[in-house]
Image (cartoon, one colour):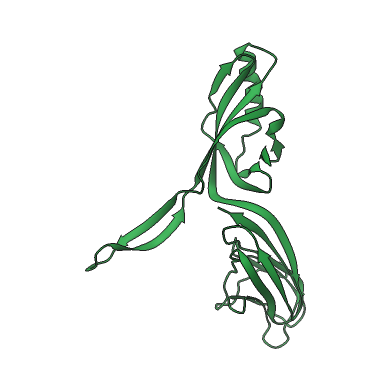
Length: 242
């Protein structure tokens, strides 16, 4: 269902969207490098560029005075001004993190005016539904990750321990794992953000073991298990959409 929510404010209460100009997905930026003695080149990376979304919106008023119409538009546009990216939702269920860029230029009509709103999304991948699962101590759980782009989870546990190796860990699909050195055989709290690459053990910054991976969930079905030590874990992830 269509909507226009930005920074927690529902602008559809005041503005009518006339057109939306947005790409199907963000532009790719292939980094192709040459190799001595070889024709062509090789692809070093293929990252996504920031994305622009242009919205033409109309504000209806009870006046034909362009000065009054401009003032009413300015009051609304002022609430769109933020220092950092805010959620922009045009369809229910997912959003981009965006900032209002450029200057909205007005085109006046009788009792109304339209403006071109340019939103810049530094992160071109949209966010969808958030999911939280509990992985039992010494056990596993199956999950199904929606979306069309990999997502990185947060992992938390209030009481983990391993009396022998002093390492607690979680594993994805029997392969990639994230192991945390607890530093003690006593119960410790652990908080990990795989997107931000941060790890906190008992309130202090820490690092995963050298053989660990910051976990990433591809869309599809997966199994998560506690593969080292004891202590259940709460795993939270948000769908990502191109």
